[in-house]
Length: 132
Image 1 (tube, rainbow, N blue to C red):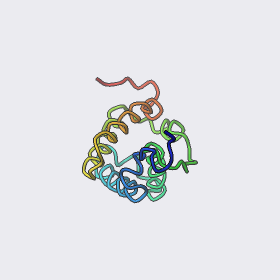
Image 2 (cartoon, one colour):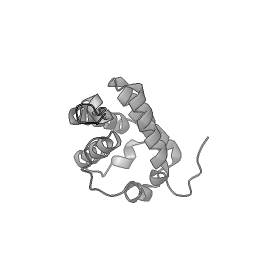
Image 3 (tube, rainbow, N blue to C red):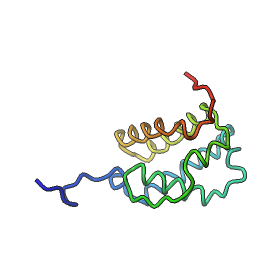
Image 4 (tube, helix red, strand yellow):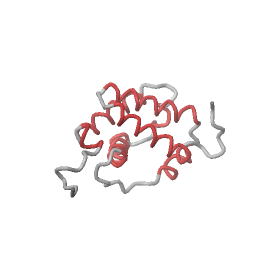
């Protein structure tokens, strides 16, 4: 059997509703993060519309959508911020809660969590001991 567009399994990106759903998730996610007193300080001098666009493009790629991201690497963008593991974990929790609230299927959330685990070392400050 030949796999065609009609028979190919839908990507996570398509399953959740594409760009509109990713944008809704990013907006709700950043509303949560900016309301978190432990995390809001990272965004004090950040262009939030641009930040939201960057995350939407990156989340699109993670979910199997079109790759249109041309920004800095995760490490380049985050290492100067000296982010501790605890804050990275909190951000991941906010993303998980956001996706859950929006009704994203559990298998997709699990895959996003796997990616969060894979990129943690690029985001968390170098030499920062991992917490249990």
